[in-house]
Image: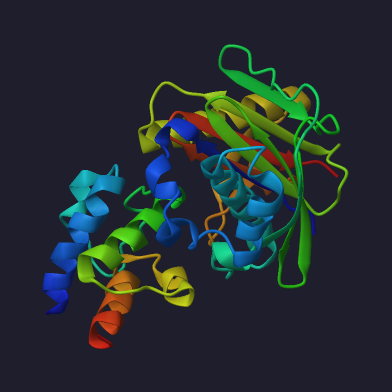
Length: 84
Length: 221
């Protein structure tokens, strides 16, 4: 799966939790989940759980801690996909 | 260095079914906290309320510590609740129509906790209302100089929440600090800072919002 394909799938994971739907179409590695996409911190765990289900991976605590922007989310997901 | 940290969870916005799934709660609770629930709290409060109470305490602790250690990353399972006392007697918060404010808490009417992260130990005070769970943390067990507020708002839109919580806090502070021109800025690491004109005030403030609720805390010397 290319990084672009992973990003497109990640958008569908994030979509239910962002109130900034307009920005979702133009997200990049630097897009911050809380600051830019206005995702409540209480929903960050939802995103991790949904990503685990979507990509059929397991995201450990230390990796989950890194998932604060789109780039770090893609890095973690790619790393876990490569470990499968 | 004094600090403050708070959080609020709107109970209507949580997913109760998901809160009970191991895959979900294990990313928030440590093993010892799950045991704490099973052994001491299972008959006292619902698991979802315990989970989100724990979340609000941990998020409050993170906000408190972030002011001291700006590069800190929020890692819920590494912020450990070591002790939690269930309130006794009349615990109903006097919420009025849509808001409540105070300084300190009446003993034994709120959840009293001790939370640890690394070598930091903090005290927590939490309220579970009909529609929200709100927490505040402090480095001292005495919360007499810890002021807080909880308000129900009309919209859950993020800009509305952000403006509402700032207005709520500033209205309180203006009553305490007349003849000031207060506003709230943000540090490089995104925690809120209180300014009087261009001068940073020595009063740490914390802001929280979730769904139709906002909350603040600030710490007086």
